[in-house]
Amino acid sequence: MTNKQIISKLIENNITIATAESCTGGSLGKIITSVPGASSIYGYGFITYANEAKEKILGVSHETLEKYGAVSPDTALQMAKGARVVSGSDIAVSVTGIAGPGGGTAEKPVGLVYIAISDKDGEEHRKLNLSGSRDEVRVKTCDKVFELIKERMNF
Image (cartoon, rainbow, N blue to C red; front, side):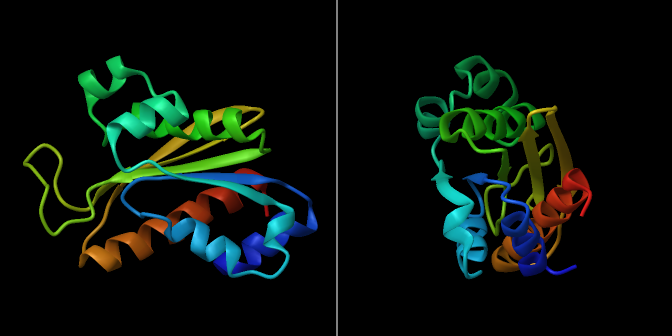
């Protein structure tokens, strides 16, 4: 099932979605809005590149960012939950990571990405260790987000 087919299933089932993006910088929103009819399910896309935005807009706790950093499962989960709460959407997905080529460390290398999803039943996340250029990491991340949506929605 392609990303566009997954979005079409969300539209068919009237499942509203919000996005909270950091390292993908709006790529998820671009993919969603490329599908005709997406406006019926997609009303909120948050690009929270800065930690301040994660806190102020999505309610990610300062303590989480201090203790675990922006690139962590805790941050991804709080981003997804915050996006769902703020938007009132049925589901929300989030992305936070290091797309490169710089910014990586031994502990958090380039290509480390956390994605998360939040719905009425709770939240779950995935850790990704991706390779490739900055653009390739971003594309692969988006593909993994749509796989997570497909699994969570049982499409």
